[in-house]
Amino acid sequence: MTPAGVRKANVAGMLRHLSREPLVGFTMMALAIFGFDAMIGEPEQETIVLSPDSVELLIDNRAAMLGRDLTQEERQQIFQNLADQEVLVREAVKLGLYMHDPITRKRMIDQMHFLMAKRAPDPTREDLERLRAERPDRYLYPRTISFEHVFFMADPEPARQLLLDLTDGAAVPDGAGDRFWLGQQLEEYTISQLLTLLGHDFVQSLNRLEPGTWAGPVRSARGWHVLRIIAFHDPKPLPDRELQRRLREDWEAAYRRQTYDAQLADMRQHYRVDLADTPPDDVRNVSELVLGTVRPGRQP
Image 1 (tube, rainbow, N blue to C red):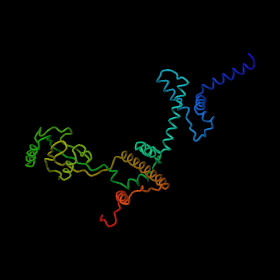
Image 2: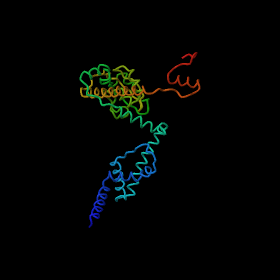
Image 3: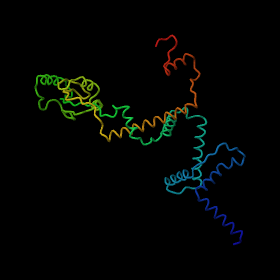
Image 4: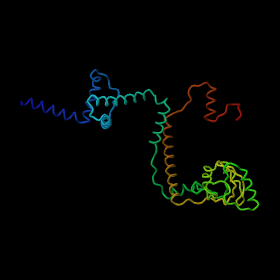
């Protein structure tokens, strides 16, 4: 082979090798797609830089779906589609389309919340003690109630008769009432638990009763109850492990809230918020709704 032939073969081999490199291959595709505009002198307004890894991942996923290697045209089409998507996103932003789409706006706001969240530093013992002193009731196990009852699912009349017997000093007869899945004695239930289990009206009635005396029939979300309060239990300290967990959670939440508020306050400095042009009466109506102002001469 002549020296010229050797050089030609070396160049061809180098080009074949380079064409198999993802970065070079994507660059060649980009030149092929956008090169024509450059040749005719179209000014480049904005540069779009695509990640070779992202393009290669799309190509690999498509090849796995088809069960074969992609042709050069198919690879180029994937690259073109990805570039077109970026073009459309940027043009949509320029047109402000996101301003009128509530779903997109919410996603952007949620993303800003995520980006503005700051990791809280580890609190000191003094930090946690100060937090506990600010809201001592939050770090107590809540007040609870213990009571015994006889349950009647549908008919309150047998409950009334039973109450008369118990008031006269009789004992609760075996098998009285209907079966209640939590049993006849409920020990140290919190108000929130009873609200979930038996409803608001039942809890309201329970709080008005005196311990040690049979009362009823008291209606719940599940039926009727003849009951006697055993005791109202005062709030008590949380177990130390639970106390420390709750204190740290509150510390982190307070830190995130404070840093978020500070960042948002700084952002507000760059904006002025006005009402759009509206008739004077409409402006006053909005002011009353948003600001709580009252029209002149109108009594609050």
